[in-house]
Length: 155
Ligand SMILES: CC(C)(COP(=O)(O)OP(=O)(O)OC[C@H]1O[C@@H](n2cnc3c(N)ncnc32)[C@H](O)[C@@H]1OP(=O)(O)O)[C@@H](O)C(=O)NCCC(=O)NCCS
Image (cartoon, rainbow, N blue to C red; front, side, top):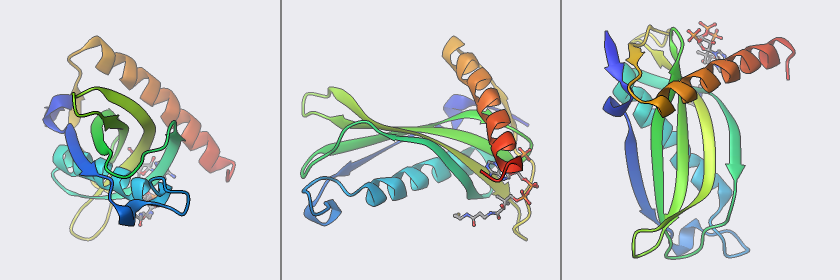
């Protein structure tokens, strides 16, 4: 089976509330990581049509803070697939009331599709439609090689 990147992309919107803040009055990073993990998981489920588990998170980059009442938009899309694994990019933005988005975080996560017994299972391949999807795919291939190398070195 083959699927398009657009078949699984998602956007989630949250409003930052008092219980999401840390002692410095900013959005708590751990809360954002949870939302990023959930967003990536949903992309993985939509693509694989299976349950998924998070194998790794990398390049999680906090670019700016977010504050109470900010509207956060998490945009998730598939960037690369292997045999049973999928790389998902999640971009987080603060959106102003007039709709302007400023990036505050970017992360790449690797999800593995699992069957009923929890064993890794094959995921659909991908039809790349745009130049940016093709460029992201090539970069995803390089990131996968780096991850394999890091795993070998125990790093
Ligand atoms: C993810 C997991 C299933 C991989 O197990 P494994 O024995 O390495 O399995 P495999 O060798 O069959 O690898 C399965 C896929 O995971 C990928 N993978 C394994 N370790 C990885 C890592 N650290 N980072 C990225 N991808 C990884 C492999 O490259 C492979 O991808 P491919 O099929 O596309 O080539 C296993 O490490 C695990 O269960 N981890 C715990 C996950 C978890 O509980 N997450 C918690 C939150 S849900």
